[in-house]
Each structure stands twice: as structure tokens, then as C-alpha cells.
Length: 333
Image (cartoon, rainbow, N blue to C red; front, side, top):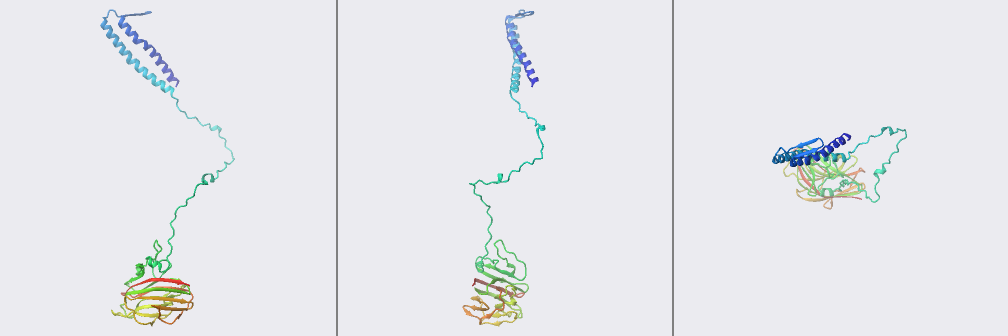
């Protein structure tokens, strides 16, 4: 900064000197003679026109030097008058290290909620409610109140509905549908636990039930099983069963007791397309089965205390089934 100020001083002195140079040149050119002490200038031997030209040249030269110097001096003055920010050095010698711990700032100072602020909790997806038995079929779902039986591993979809299409079991058109033509013998179903005093009602309709082997029947079965060991062979089953491979083979109504392979015949044959209302009524140890409000047999003694209601089918290889169950309701007393 000192060097700049000294340089500026020299420029100002030079400008002061040059300030008088222009007028002196003009005077000498006009008068033709100038004496300042020992300095003597005599231009009278040059004609007046020549002196005028010489004066003009001198003025031009003077301006070409004087004007840039004035501009440069102005810039330097602005630079000097503008303060330059400086960074102060930190005096590290003033830092004192001690063993005294710094008190912790409580996190509540940063997380406290103003009293007038309402806390808003994030919206979480609500769990899908499990539909009751029968209501689920109407909604096009086999809900998880039912348990799939025997063979395979199945998972519920995002709505909590079992996907049993590979078994030919599905909930559609407000009904539980059975539609299967298995390449090998198949026996599948679903069951739900019920109390010792319950009423289960539904309607059933069969469009096709076929077996290609006389000794291997195909059937649609409803029944009461022990819920702690839900094996259809251990339960009381009400069957719609085809036993021969004839094209017009009759569909028998049969009742099978626990552990029995053969079944007793009940009433007239079933006619394809007919819709029948079926009711299972449990009263403690006794089970009464109704078809269209008529008992199909005398009350049956139930030899197990834990109860489950079963819906399923058995179809041999090459056979087929097409049936639907609708209007199902379970009333537990």
C-alpha cells in the first residue's frame, strides 16, 4: 500500500508539471518568444503559420500524455480508498485445555414439540379383515378362516384369500366352485372349525361328476371331522357319488361313517343341474343332516368332541367334477 501511495505522488507531481506545459506551448506558438530566467525560447524566425502548426502539435502531444495519466491516477485513488477485508489470525495461545467435561445439551432442547402443534402419525395400511365363512365366497374369496387340506403348499394373496386354482377350487360368482379334470387321482378340500352346537347351511348344484374306473368312485363330500385330526376318512361324510363309468351313471346320495370304506345309500339319485338345500345341525353329541328340510337319516352320534366342517372332492385320474356351493352360513350356538 505504501509503494502505491508513493507512486501516486509521483504521478500527481508529473501531472502538475504537465498542467503548465500545454499553456506554455500555446503561448510560445502565438508570441514566438519566451524568457523564464536563463530559459530563452525564440521562434520568431518561424512564420506565424508554422508556429501555429507547431503549437497544435504540442497541444496534441500534451493531451495524449496528460489525459492517460489523469485516468490512471483516478483508478489508483479508487483502489486506495477501497478497504480490503482481512482475515484475523486466531490466537491459539489463548486456548486453554482442561479436564472439565462440557455439559451435554439435552436432546429435548432440539426435539421438543410446541404445545400448539398437533402431532400427525404416519398413515399405515390397515390389515385386511378376514371374511366370515360364506361371506367370503360371496366376495370372491376363500378366506383364511378355512384351512386347505392335503397336498401342496399354498399362500394367501394380498387380500388374505387362498389361491387353490391348481386344485380346481375357487370362489367365483358368489359361490365356491369345483372344476377339475386331474391327470392323477386327487382328493382335496377345505375345512373350518366349529363348535359342538352349530348349524351349517348351504345349497349345492352339480353339472358333472365322472369316473373312468368302476372300482374308483368320484364324489363331492360334505361332513363333520375331528378338528384336531382333520382327515376325511375319520369323519362323518354326506356324499354325492358316481361309482361307474357309464355315461348316464347315477349320482348316489350316501352316508359314510368314520373308518368305513363303504357307504349306505340315502333316498333317490341326484339329477344333474338340480339345486338342493343342505343343513348340518350339531346338538352336542348328535348330528342331523337335512336335504330340502327333510332328514336324510336318523340323528348320528358324533364320537369326537372337536369339530370341523368339511367341503371337498375325490376324483380319480381321467375323471372330472363341475359343481358349485352357494349361500353357505355357519351359526355357532
